[in-house]
Length: 313
Ligand code: ZN
Image 1 (cartoon, rainbow, N blue to C red):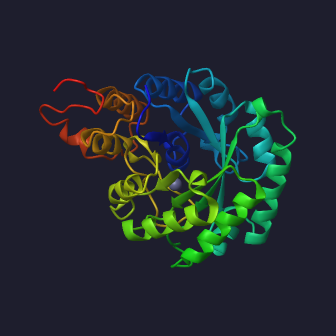
Image 2: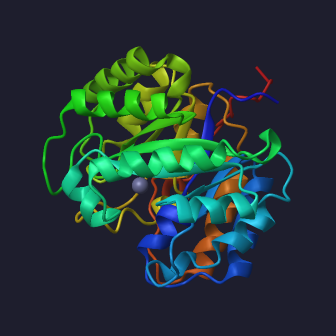
C-alpha cells in the first residue's frame, strides 16, 4: 500500500551511537525485524566508521546484510568518507548518507575536514559510485547537518546552506537532506530553507528532513515540513540518542509521537502504532538503563483512535 509519509527510523544509528551500552548484534536484528513487521519501510541501521570511534556501531556491515533480507525495507547507513562508502557498498546497503556540516568549525571537529575537503571527498565518492553497475549503486544522499544553527558557531547563514546544496547536487549527489543536528530550527526557518534548496536544486532533490527535538520544536518542524511537501521524516524509536559531536544536542523526534501526529491527521505511514509501542517495550527491555522518551507511549492511544488507513467510518 502506498503511504503518504515515509518515516525513516534512525534509532539504530543516531540513537545507539549516543548511549554508552553496546546493543548486541542479535538484539539489533530483533529490533529491525520487529519494527519492519510493524510497518517501518526505511531504517538507518548504522555507520561505517572505525570501531574505535563508535564501538556501538562496529557491527554495521553484519546488521546491514541482515536487514537487506527483509522484504520492502530500504536499508540506509551513514558514511564519513570514501573509505566508509566502499565498505557500505560492499555490504549491499540501499542508501548511503554522507554528513556535510554547514558549520566549518563543526565539520572540522566532526569529520576532521574543512568545507573544501568535504566537497573533494563527495566528488571522490560520486566518482567511485559512477564505476558501479546500476543495480549495485546505492542512492547517495548528502545530509546538510547543522543547517539550522551550530552549538559552536551559532547562526548558520541560509544562503550558505542553499549554495552548498546546489554544489553537491551539481557534483552528483542524488539528494540532499536538511538536518537540524542541534535542535535550533523553527518552522519559518525550515520553510525558507526548503523553498530555497528546492529552487536552487530542483524539488526532486530534497524530500527528507532530519529533525531533533532538543528544544521541543521537533513535531512543529515536522508538521511544517509535511505542509511543504516533504515526504520523508527521520525519527528515533523512544527518541533515543542524539548527536555526540554537537554539545547540548540530544534526542531525535520520537517515532511513536510522529506516527501518532501523522496518522491522527489522516496521513498514512504504513506503521501500526500499537505494534510499534510493543517494539519500544522490547528495546527498553534490552536497554534497561537507557531513558526512552515520548508522550504517546506514556499516555496511551486515545479512546476511539483510528489510523489513517482505517476504512471504517
Ligand atoms: Zn541527528
